[in-house]
Image (cartoon, rainbow, N blue to C red):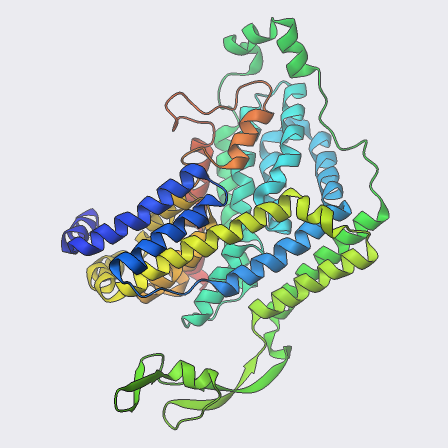
Length: 492
């Protein structure tokens, strides 16, 4: 397999290599600055490709962006209503009731919080509580904290409103693979839970116990350090949650159930008469020197025999999700005392908008490069894809290491994978591999987890890659991908 990859590099011409280096360079520089810079600096790379190398601009992923905006707005409004506080409080009660099993229960908790809300940034609220429970039970905080941070990101490929899942379904349907959100979740949720359990089991006896750790024992001999580590009490149990906040959670969960229901029973969705292309999107000669695509004819409602035909089109799932999420947000504003200004200032909405900009720039840059070199890429990768279609998982993982966004990986790389002829079930099977940004510990949730651990056992190592998230991350992603691939092989 690796010899095929080496021969691929040998067949790329000089211009393609230079353009690829520009793409990778933009992603690398953007990741160094983080946040909005990923999308913005991708714009510089796009400008160089278009104006410097005269590549035809690709298409920005507007459908996915609209869904993210709708879902993040709804989740942000729920947070502004106080609903997120209630969810965290429920999670804390469960964790404090079973402190002995914190290494297993903490990642399961952060996983399902992400599944519900669609973003891993909820970890900031629960992580101090996980650390506090571990310390009071005498458990090395690195054990639950490391895997819990990983779990908060793994849940993204298991959430019905997360960009990665919605983008996978939308792009797959466009490329002829008929898959729904529930079918994706039936693969990703059990697969990722298997991966998390494996990572938690590997973390259960990780490192020295606190009473046997000489560095920790030396630290707590200092009265100030002892007070810092054991003196505070992180909790949400003393916070009174109003009924309006609980109602907002019920509205949010109801919106998720509506989306899942219609994803299962799509036949009852509204439908309209429309025109569809039957010849595809290739150029059609309509007059001397003039061409048009069948897709453009169809979008204009023009019926041409042998090129387009009349059909019935159901309401698309991407539009349904937007309608339901925006409506749910409105209901929370009207009936649950949720402040839109507070929502905009909240971490859920802000992190979601950062993701929008990142996906916008990264996916547009990647689509521009790959769409202009698709024939060359297909020719070069044909042997690899036919022999080892699952090897696309390595590409997904490596791209994720660069761009710190699972949604951006799916949006930028999945169209290429389909055009290379990789079957949809194989791509569904390797979906967990789009999470690789734990590899270099610069993601906000990992950095925050290090800061929340007052014991100092959760660390970013001296050599950067020997950090507390590497082992659980590699185990979780590897096991999750293998299990998901087996599920799709057996049942899909």
